[in-house]
Length: 343
Image 1 (cartoon, helix red, strand yellow):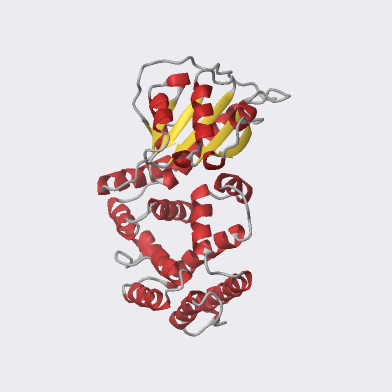
Image 2: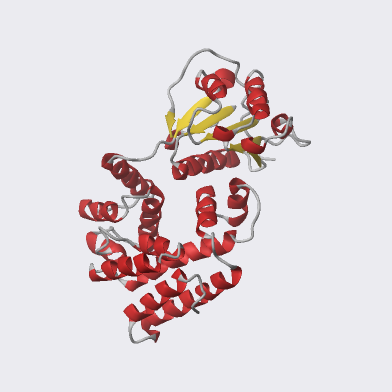
């Protein structure tokens, strides 16, 4: 077993501490991850898991749903294992926790287990106020990591800058503005766009590089077209598609956006379990599991399979196998909007 620094449980303290930003998360006996921005919360929790796993690869990670809590679960999961591995317990839905969880979580703060890291995800609201007050007072060595929605343009700008800086990549000011214009509505999609540019571009990211992927999509982006089609709103999806194409969008990134969403839906379809558990099994983020579950409402396995085949055929057609890329994309959008029924 790899060497690690043992962190004894901190004793209760009445001192209040300020919340950390999502990217400042660090190990503590109990970590409250609060706020409405699920994408940043998921990323913060993954970062903490990576820190702990690097420190000791034998880290045991378990998931717990506070809304469906049974007495004794928290103590059982936090208790030392046979071989003494550190434990990380990810607790979801604390904003909907039942009374048993609240009582036992507050009791746990009085004497946290050694080498155990309890991560409490609270999405907002007043439920669990007594527990939140205790956590924010630093009881049991607890810290808070705030993941508020990025509403201001300056916050989104800082987020995107940090994405490229962390990856060690240069992006011109004009290119950065273009990315933000195309993906200002959703921080998860903004992060995905930054990741794609970082992955696919070997040199400095310029406006021409951004235009290659996302050109002309200040008002309409590929994910909006995909969202409308997957939800079955064929008229809206077709109108958004035509607007995007008229604005200069290329069919290749449009099809790529559909492919990303359908692949995730296929992974999640039929899978059971908490979002955190499935995310670990499937290699995706918990917010992607939740989004895919919403997207899958009204879909059948046969319909999804047919649309994935249509997607593959469309990808070939827009890359040289067909004569009319625009027709191929329109055909794909209508087929997906029918959830495979028209295929």
